[in-house]
Length: 304
Image 1 (cartoon, rainbow, N blue to C red):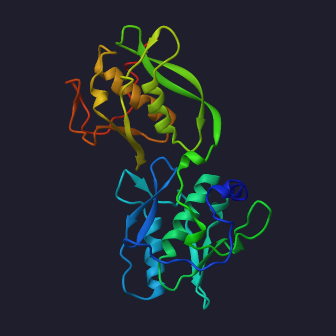
Image 2: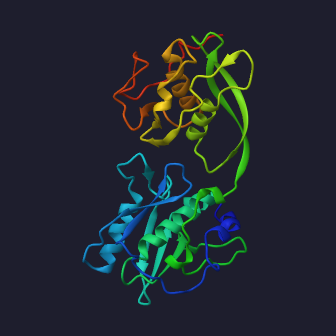
Image 3: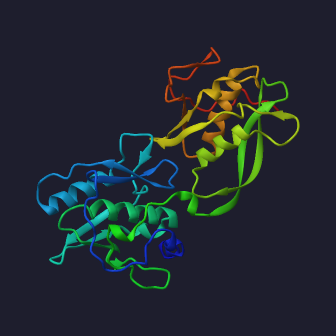
């Protein structure tokens, strides 16, 4: 909830929220801020502020920020369902932004990233000195019931998601290989994990780690490195390094491929999985499994 977000505020704000003039565009041009695929850190991309009215610049930037980018490496800071309902720029150069009611239901880390990204992006527009957030017509409140108040770019620090230690316990249903390496077996694994990590990335990491129970075997080489895991339009993109290709743990390459696909489709929000190696999908895994297109779950390989 929004009110819980301020429990983490010391990780993100300098000296709390307060009225202070922003610095405007930084060196090296202007940017729009996105969030990485893990949902743990901000990513900035070059953005050209057109020489038009202040109002037009604000509207264009907000429209850009709410639109999902054409990339699997980063995404909008606006979680699904969160949108700007209206905004107004006052004579005092304060930009009041009114969000829909779903803003109040965001996870604390999502809310912090959205707020940091929106403020740092819009504060670059000449004529926007301060930014104030509202949920519908009510001011955004902190955990003490006080209004967050005016914000500018200087309030926010770039930070790494590793500073948000939000750990929880959970269970994953993962697919591993049987002792012969020619069939899949499903096992439930209990883990303690950082809730900032996407469930899809968590699944891939656990598959690389391999099983701890006896009688079942790994499906991926432990030296495999994860380049990135992201979800776009119900497709999960799993980008691995070349260590993934050196697999001696299974006799049937489909076991490895569908251990990944089945585990992600069963445990996440994707209906298909696209596997890439160093960003390339034009591959036949171990000479036989075509990875050029997204794959759907296949339970025919699952044994007893």
